[in-house]
Image (cartoon, rainbow, N blue to C red; front, side, top):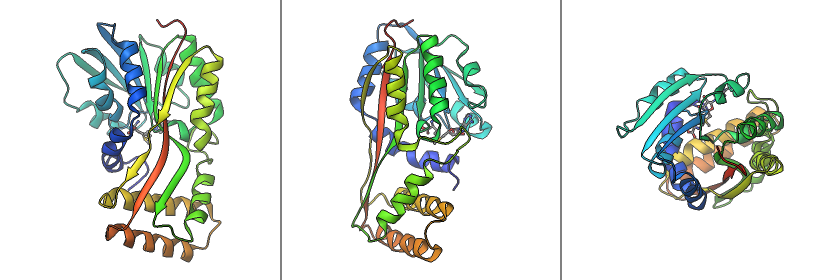
Length: 269
Ligand SMILES: C[S@@+](CC[C@H](N)C(=O)[O-])C[C@H]1O[C@@H](n2cnc3c(N)ncnc32)[C@H](O)[C@@H]1O
């Protein structure tokens, strides 16, 4: 399963939905409730997880523009069954080179999820500047914040986490990524531009019976550790086998720290 495959995004969606911070969601709903209709641009939409998560919290008449550079994911996203007052269009764009073009349309809310930790400080500056120039509120969900843990612990866990967090800082197509520092950086930039921010944690919590999700996360962590090249292959694969055995026999719990935030400009359009 690749990082952004439809299968992976489908597997993680219920965990994302469960994790989304309710106080932040309430702030989004309260800010937009007075509108009779709303136009949303979802950046890096994938299969439409944010559309499905946010749809029930917004005014009934909604127009969504989903933006991604993966046509297969966009096609799946637009197949989401929705109420008759909700329309969705897909716009394929490369958000690294065409971020500003993505926002050059009538828009009342910009959303983004599971992306900020993959991008650079330069790109986050651009995002903050672009939404501020247009006075648009921004809902950003599920940014990894560097906290992760496994139960029961394994003597090799900390070595793996160190490599995973180092991998977080590698270039994912938007310049060297800020990884765990991304959400705090974005919030600071937006506040400097006059935005008010409501934020809260949105951690993944995997119980022992969440076997498939744990297995995928563990494989992803092992792969990231191997990519970094700092640990012996045999040690990483032996760790992965121990952890997968524990997950397969429902002896493993796992958590991953995320941050959600909603940023509103002092004067909303
Ligand atoms: C981790 S997924 C998150 C998807 C979705 N927001 C969610 O929460 O399920 C990251 C998404 O970013 C998209 N993406 C990555 N690089 C991109 C780029 N340069 N331009 C547009 N989309 C990009 C991927 O195709 C993928 O859909």
